[in-house]
Image 1 (tube, one colour):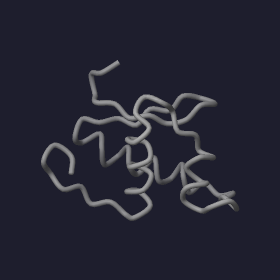
Image 2 (tube, rainbow, N blue to C red):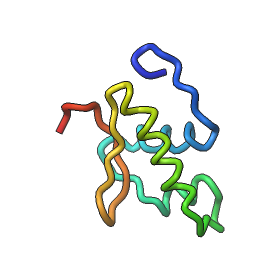
Image 3 (cartoon, rainbow, N blue to C red):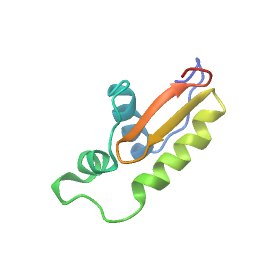
Length: 82
């Protein structure tokens, strides 16, 4: 739920969002997300990037933003927060 509204998410989107939110202000790397999603084998595709892109499109409508820090990972913030 975002702002009291139910947000339709795929299972992968839901898992990625939970991991990013759960980390707070600590960036979650793409490798860490792949590890959680696919286990030790990881994934060599762009699945994480595509999932984050879809999440960004869905969340921006509700005032949330997924930020990326080059070489570190992803965090989430409310628009207007620094």
